[in-house]
Length: 425
Image (cartoon, rainbow, N blue to C red; front, side, top):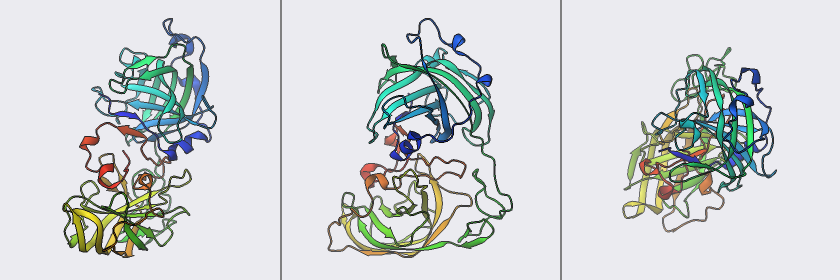
């Protein structure tokens, strides 16, 4: 059973609604042409030609903008290629050089395809649905070269898609009688080339680090010429979220990155008792006391959020009025010597430090909500703004929020019901 259905965040919608410079589609290198692709049993006879632009890897799939609007002008459209394992249980990341026939017996239905092309027309502004979905009925993908990182490749596509409905339970795709069709061509090169030059530290743009890197407690400076101390920050106005009292939120006093809001939160999971908790060596996947800062963590297409997670230090819970043993809205505590490092957060919530990434040192963060039931959090975070971004390497210019939603939420440790978080998956 395929694990994903369609969900696109507002951040990505804004990116794709106004395509940037198009990637050149070398049609001469594409294996198939229209005469050899269209068969007699396909209902559409004339398809509108469209090219792809801004092809990129985003959360395990290829996504791209279209050269022209296919529906309502003020709503976004999206092109997507999904590669699945042979048993359809997971998205595939290890591509192989060669040709992929999109009209093969397995690929002629979304329920069985291992190479799947879909187009979404008029994605609702609130991501609640689309006006129409299109699926392949003929065409080919050519993978000419593969890179060292997951899904990296040089390739091209020539595909015909027509309007379908897709059953939410079986994933069976059914052509819509009289539906529109499109002939889509495009090419891409998502193979990252490391870039260090004279840099002695910092990221190489491809998941690696330049030079010898920086020692613990240091970060690379802006021009990557040397190491400096972690950025010192103070946290003010820490209060429980009015809807999720186990989620405490605060204000980052100093401005990080661009002029967008920076978001601070402490997430408490499971039973809590007053005491001192060592945050060293923890992971977001299974932390019981989780400290997170999201730099430029707003729903804005121009923002490039970074996520920071605890590396060392302590959380001191001086007092708390618990609810069934779990954190409630009334407590007193502070952070002591907490250092955060830049991370990515995977679909299973595992946090991984970014090679050559930045770091933050919290110099002050304390709260006392004893006697105050809940506090209005209008000035703090909304549910859609909480840990919703994963930062990839510089080459991955798409910052990925929930680009494709999975159906395996029962296996996930953290959920919206737990703390109001919407960690990307």
